[in-house]
Amino acid sequence: MSPSSVATRARSKERAGDTPEPSRPKTGPARRRRTDGRRWAPLGFLAPFGTLFAVTFVAPICYALYESLYKLHRSGLGLAPPSEVFAGLSNYTDALGDHAFTASIVRVVLIGLVQVPLMLGLALVLALLLDARRTPFKRFFRLSFFLPYAIPGVIGGLMWSFLYQPDVSPVAAALARIGLHVDFTSDGMLPWSVGNMLTWGWTGYNMIVIHSALKAIPGEFTEAAELDGCTGWRLAWHIKIPMVRPALVMTTVFSIIGMAQLYNEPVIMKAVAPNLAGDWTPIMAAQNEVAANNYHAAATRSVILALVIFALSFGFMRFVNKRGGAQ
Image (cartoon, rainbow, N blue to C red; front, side, top):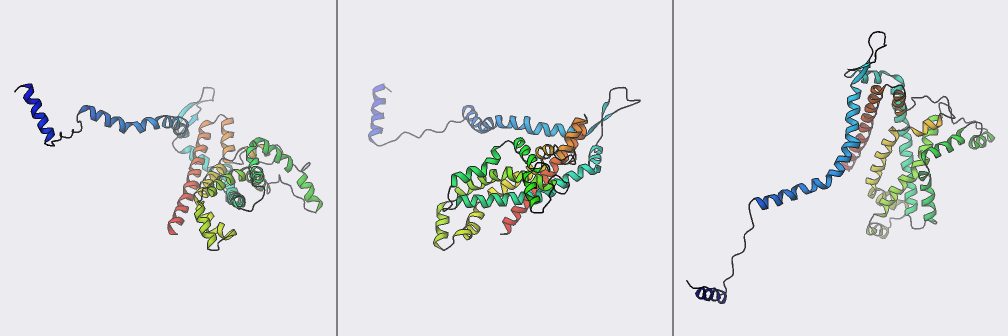
């Protein structure tokens, strides 16, 4: 067949309205490689975070678990260097049998049962006041409430230590003038004094988180409620507070974790309260073991504290989820 006849037949097919067949998708190794590349691409983006998370979080936890299963063994007269021997769970039984350590856990939990609800309730009230339409000087009050969190914790602890010291405390002097003699550094007042320091330092932070959640509520909800006559505290109780429930849950979990890790405030308070024990909190008890070069016991107490934090945090979240499902 000559080239001219081929061209003639092609032109005749075009006049007849014939269309070329659609191209079929390519198959084979090339397409398979492109599909595999798309499948593994998200893992490439997650790799930096996963590596950092494993190095800074997972690895220390695994190492602490490993250290907690060993202890130092000294043989003979103790002149030879000690050797590490597998101890199983004996370190855990020793730690749980230590009355001072278990008392520190109970003490921190009891402080949290009072301080965390009080702090978050105050933060919620302040956030609702700032979110109200008729609140004057909103910017000033927002900065004033947040300012304690901006002050370093050590500086705040030193300031409150001065206010608590019986000899120079202006608060104690003012109370003494009306017949109330209060020693903020006594054994009975120490939990309240430390709880007050935490409330002062962290209420502003939680207030900002809750206030941001309030600002994210669509205006249609509040406008519809106001048209139905729901205003003021009724609007806050029935509309705003249920809408910021996730923020309240998040701040509660963070507060539980922070309370269990209480360390700075009691350590600073020891300067004005010598009666405050060196193992007043679980973190302080673990630090004492580190100072005594007993790293295995310190790791054991750290693991126990982590388990307590896990139980309290996830127990609270499960309770909240059940309540939410029941409603």
